[in-house]
Image 1 (tube, rainbow, N blue to C red):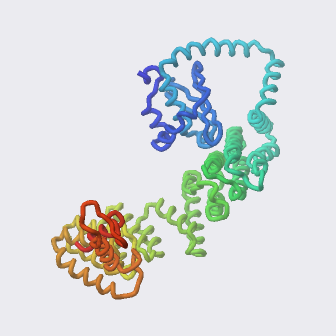
Image 2 (image 1 turned 30 degrees about the horizontal axis):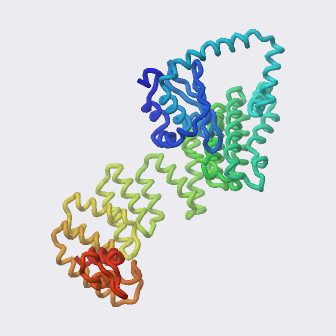
Length: 493
């Protein structure tokens, strides 16, 4: 019924927003206020980190669409605030037709009144609005400067918008002020896009790069717990990418700039991904990007950013062998890199090679007490699938000998029970634990596993055997002993 009245349903909201934003929007239903139904759009205010204005267009040839002035919404996304307003509209679907009918004469009356105003009267009206709305004034100033190609003014206004100092009351931008600053950053991005659309794409590229630099320098002094500033900064990156495409920026120069930003200080403010520029870079730019990444990796082989960039570029190239060779240069002693290689090979349909790499990981890391559990599970799962239960037991046995933990014992027991050889394995495992108990070393529970288990078992047995677990002087109650008893029974049985 609601869909027939307003032209959409919950499924449409979920499809536009995505599962995550839709679920988050459910939590903002009580934050929607001032819902106003017009002849076309529906507007409302949603109180989030700040008060955000939302506009939904219900139906029409293009279907449901939404706009919000939060940073994520200004990127063109159907955000959680749009979801909240959409759900509110659905709840009030019965009243929508009546409200729309009442809005039509108001809209036509406004249009007729504006059309009847003289030029001077319209100018006076705009001036009044500019005086009351600082954001509108800034937007119109930027449009006016761009229209007359006053790039100096445009640059000054954009840099003023991303200057955090007016928001930094105590030397940094507090959490409460981050959303206001983020709105200005998004406004700067819109100005850059307008500059590109106005035929000044090359100038927009330079201004965007300057804006990204300033944002990077300022970000450490901003409490961006909600990520709103980062989201707004991403809109500046998008404006830069669009301008680069229109201006046909030199691809090699762009590659150098991208690598410098990704590997330099202040890159954390954006999710700048050089591969998003692939279309603008073209073959020559991508080749230069890979060359620069490889050089940076050689200079600083242990650098996380350098390694990640190189991995992204090689992986995007689709050369599995090159990616494996890159991973193999820095094998983690926990076996996590071996597992990553195995997973890449398996995804490429090379299951035998994948298992070989995973097995190598177990051998290379055999002496390590702490090995990546997912690697062990990976090998055991493949052995089990291939009908090799004895090999599963062998892997679990080796890990138990290296770790001597309750978890390793339990995994060995499960594997041996599946292979129907638990009695023999249990005798050998307990012998290992007895030997371990003679050594002075700290175990997972404060001592060797067997001693911990036996102490728990003895504590439980000291309790009188009545149904209520009656306690005596100096004795441990049944409830207190339950964790120790569970551990002891799990281990010894």
